[in-house]
Image (tube, rainbow, N blue to C red; front, side, top):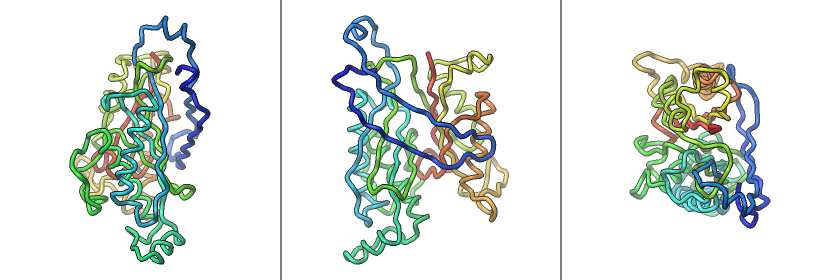
Length: 302
């Protein structure tokens, strides 16, 4: 809830395809509802779930996957934080970014202008765009303080964000940024917290996120678990083909893509813990958590 003057009619839609395994198709809708002055006076202003939205300018094809996209995304994250009433990076627990990709037409556009795009592959450009967007989030939140070179994208895996979630699509040319965090400027009955999964079966990180949201012990009962509004996570197969010393075949299966394998695996871990398969698991986690892992956030009804 926000003061009426702060409420705007803006709708940001992020559609993520892929509900492999036991993942259940669903929609999670966030609404910013006006709060009256009386309600503002009567509450003790605890931090509650807040949402902020911002957008970058349209990118030139040759900027996708490179520093211009990183820097513009960082600026948009800061704008979205202000929109949500969040002043501290520590209160940001999930940053959803919808970003563009390169098509054949966009590649030709860049070359006609005398520029070489980061790749001519549409599929590979999705990874570059997601990676640059995630690095922009990390820059905005102080997770990375040094300047990031173009060459670091999809190469230096030590650079990552613990709260970024990027998804690439053909339908836009800019980045749409949605920040989820906690703020005293918001009211309501929910909070959000996060942790970082170190690999695809890191159940302890999911439990930590629940505990950080104030839900310690809630998973012991069905009624307690129902206070979990949703879980948001990123998933990617470990690029070295190993998982805790064991070989995995996610990268080698010619029938099922690695991303689908990873979403199904992580979705199963989270659903097994929470007792609910209607969770959001997004693939393509370049620079979003460590290789093979990724951020996980829990929205919890207090």
